[in-house]
Length: 302
Image (cartoon, rainbow, N blue to C red; front, side, top):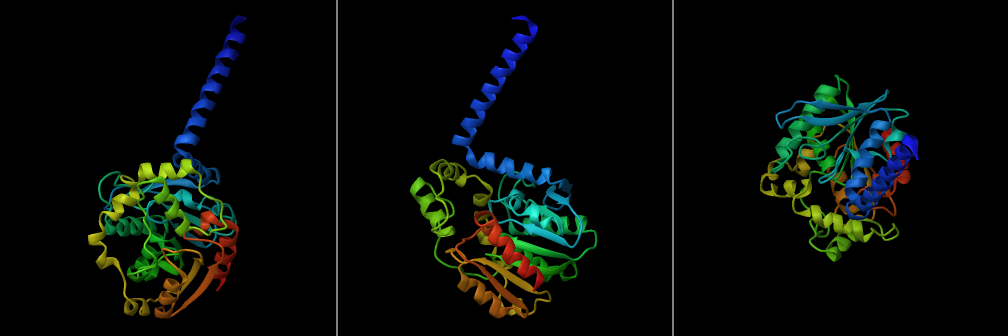
């Protein structure tokens, strides 16, 4: 066979082994595969991975592009890669800053409870360090919307506008949703409440992966600090004093944060407009990226 034949045979065996491992990962750890691919997608767009010191420890963010600065802030249990489907379109006309919130993705703390104060401090450090004095539009989903409005109140000189996406700082929301399911059926009910009925069903392998990470993942670590979250909530009276405009892009099928929540928040804000995204749930940038981008474009222009 000769050295070349041996080498080709060995390479083929390695490729087959790699394919087998990849197939196993997709079948058994689909969320890990998706998360890794999404983060690599941000890098392929030319966004640089940057590390910023903060009181909460090193914070990771992706930065790149030119134009007005958009800061894309993910929700609890998520990470910067959640914006991978919409980042290419946004990068055409904007500079993007996409952080991993404290305790999420690759940002510290890597273990233990994730306190709301740590998230706020980490996000402020990223914005002050990488924003380079520019006023930014903060686009936040779920917890990210809550944190964006907290920052707009604490640091109004740094914030041009807030776009809240299915989230906010007011106490109370919609129907009870089990965000830490223990069985496949519980996970299926959870996803049904967070997505539109017309959206493709979540595969069982993904539901099983959700369950595996429910007890120890970043969402559980954050939820375990619920007793300390109260001081970071805002009242209607505090929202009425907000100095920056707020636009709301809202998946209309979300049971956790329904349209009524958005309307209640909008009634308290001095400058707000609501842009519903029909046939879409709690995470529209992932569930319906094209329609989300259409609504976001209107919100940014309004």
